[in-house]
Image 1: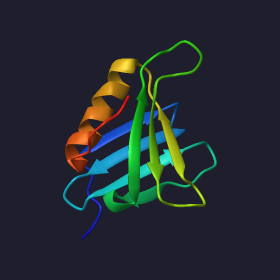
Image 2 (image 1 turned 90 degrees about the vertical axis):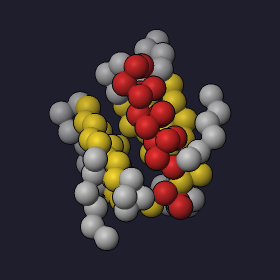
Image 3 (image 1 turned 180 degrees about the vertical axis):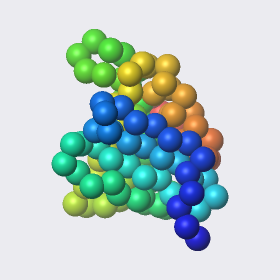
Image 4 (image 1 turned 45 degrees about the vertical axis):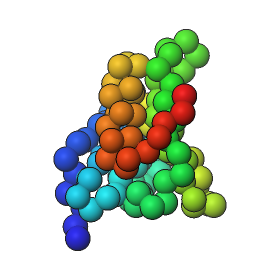
Length: 100
């Protein structure tokens, strides 16, 4: 099954990317200028965390995976509301119980 995202997010002129494909149960994540985009299957995701405050750093969604080489993927957002929407979208797609 090919990767065909239904939702896309980018921030920082392509520095951060997050794409969701519920039908193939995969995410595409890019977390830096020089990192390559990585496709992560839902079965590799342990937890998803959200930070909506804009005090110290931009709001973000952090995806924690079972991959020991790169266990965390943090994607920044312009607003806390956008991060919250993506957190809820990922939770609904993966049927996850969220902890904040």
